[in-house]
Image 1: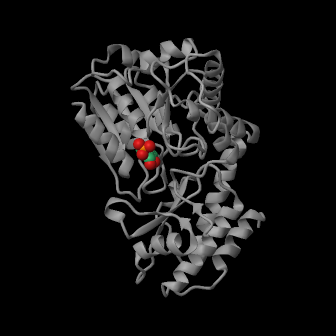
Image 2: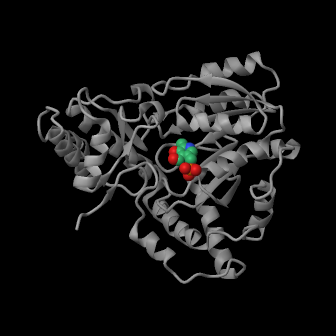
Image 3: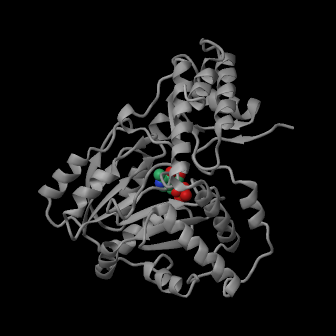
Length: 381
Ligand SMILES: Cc1ncc(COP(=O)(O)O)c(C=O)c1O
């Protein structure tokens, strides 16, 4: 028997309480029992999104709400600014193009942070831009983009909506939807919400509803209005993922009990311990110091070591699943997730496994240095 540790930025570990809630006998979704759970889930989502506005819940993975945000806000031929510095920004650009939008492409290296000044310039130089699309927490690179400042910029443009992919941001980093003027913020269940994959949610501001009213792009399953109308009746337009919704109520209660600020602070500490632990082993962090998120820590594979072998040895020999690099960074970086149901000893265990893996692959460093650095963070040193 080998004990398994899931240290990826999605799917993430699911607490036993949440698993048990999902194991309950299935209930019908047109019943007061389901309506009560659903209403509770929507209220809890408003809390984690920090919004008093609408939150819509879909049976899909995160990409479904990404696509829906485009289909519900725009018309073919509309111009949008897409900020991209990783795989998921790339995906938003592809979706926008598939729907016939004209994309102003703010294309950064994966190791760079989106510069809000570039968004201001793009909006200034291109009157009539209908949307700005940005990934808050880029899972492929670990970069945290400053959506707060971008929110201030976009707020000056009454006909421009700000769409934020916070699929690995929500629950891990601050994301104040209303206060920061974010019009559409998205997340997925298999991330900070500590659930299996299968649910996705987004916020919709008044400004985004105005964009919806003028939008002519085709939509049916993901038509926001269908979901909003049904929320008023405490239900969903189509058969929901009932068991996941039951689990979601429990997961959201756990976050509420911890307190969102504490949840975010815990993620900050886990990320800091992971970073300091890796640096103590002589490893180099991928994301730049001015934009490191708390959901995932990507790390450069050291010279002379096979990056794919790190991920494989961690999993096969030690039972610890971490993520490799994506696209151009396959084999060049590895990524340690700490998003959702994670505590101090998950990080200690992972660093211990990483040390054993690296030592086995011939990399030289001081044994125990990574663990000691993480311990120091946890002990407030
Ligand atoms: C930032 C970000 N955006 C979008 C997605 C896409 O979500 P999904 O794979 O659930 O469709 C992910 C998933 O990894 C993500 O991390």
